[in-house]
Picture 1 (cartoon, rainbow, N blue to C red):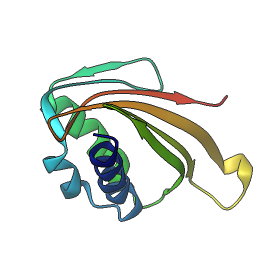
Picture 2 (picture 1 turned 90 degrees about the vertical axis):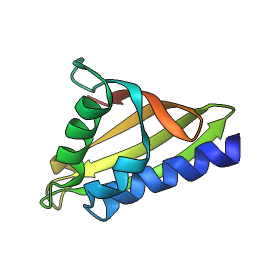
Picture 3 (picture 1 turned 90 degrees about the horizontal axis):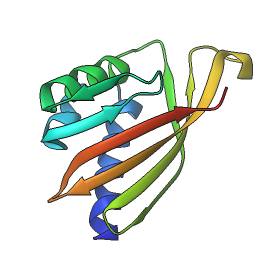
Picture 4 (picture 1 turned 180 degrees about the vertical axis):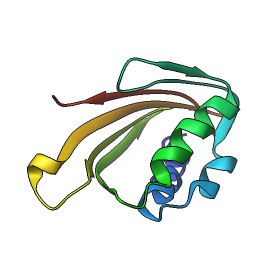
Length: 113
């Protein structure tokens, strides 16, 4: 399972790297739940896709995955999101993810304040 979870996380990251939300469609389970970095909860495939698609499609940002690892059905993505050239125009965060049957079923996002 770790190899499967890592593969899913790399494909997930590609959506943000390429600003291509269409990549996400084949990665999100019907019962997916996101607890976003601002504390909001998004439940169901449509809600999760809408949130992530908005972020992935933002052409004025740059997503930088810094580390990805998995253990069983769990995965961690450590990342930085930039909206300008300096460190003051970015923040670092982490997503704690869970996969089942090749799809993302849970994501909890945290940012470093």
